[in-house]
Image 1 (spheres, one colour):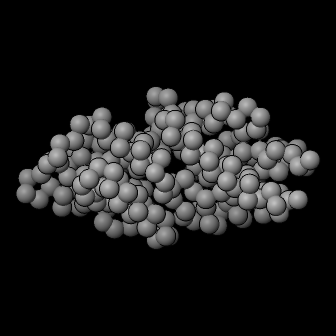
Image 2 (tube, one colour):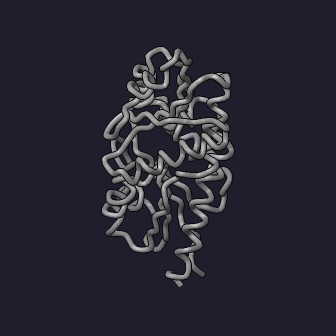
Image 3 (cartoon, one colour):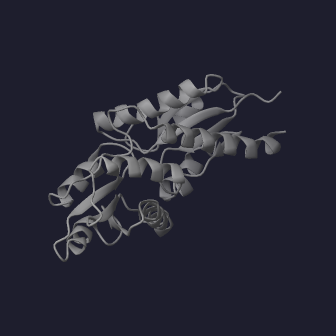
Length: 238
């Protein structure tokens, strides 16, 4: 019988203690929901253990599914994870977390806490990537959020792509409209702090993960990515 694959959740990594705690809480909740699965947390950058160390910690014959805790499929998903796991057999990599309706659900929940009015403009703050396929994933998410809310949602990037958040907020304010910034960032850290600065006094929603309990929809999303990838990899292993 083929062993149950381990779930290796790989985050970007952050120097922020609050961000580290928030991501760790998500992985702890995933592990609690999958008691029969070996769940570990690793990082593609900044923190340890990295991808290689996370895989090295498994038993020699233990298969694994890497679930990127990343909101879009940029360089880390398309290149780094594949290169860093290339020396390990029986490793599959799931798609990134987004776009997905469950992320939109979490975004809408965070945004609702700011009590936006029908007259407010909504701008989605996004980290940004040098890979425009990742940026397009985020634009898709903005459109999905707009459909969920029944209103337009524009995008403001924090790095690597245009329009940047500050000009996006200024443009949305034309005509004297109040701007509310939705937050498409996984956890507290550098980019969240940057979003707050660039929003120029516009209220900014909390990141998807923070110091409260991880949303059930996010836990379900990670588990769904794991199960789908494990099921697809099973025929190859048999």
